Amino acid sequence: QVQLVESGGGLVQPGGSLRLSCAASGFTFSSSAMSWYRQAPGKERELVARITSGLRSTNYIDSVKGRFTISKDNAKNTVYLQMNSLKPEDTAVYYCNARGVGSLGVYDYWGQGTQVTVSS
Image (cartoon, rainbow, N blue to C red):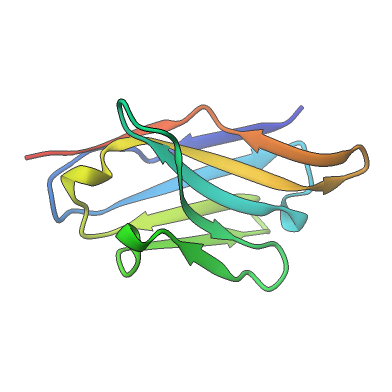
């Protein structure tokens, strides 16, 4: 059974930090590209950060570059998103995503989301 379980969200003041975690199971985590998406009220879901499976190259949307860092720990089957210098516009539900190719073809898995609220 595939599971992606996010944690670490919450309420934080502007300028603060949070670290999101996504614990994965039920598929080959080390072979998967892992991503964090977010969706703010009334807006479309957008890709925030991605880390590839092999070389672990990363990419970010411009608005979070220099503030957010994505990383993965294959031993723990967990991907992280360290978020620093948070701004009110970072408020959204953050979703973990896994993509890759398995024995049954391409897969695309999603977590249930975790709320991040940046407010004073």
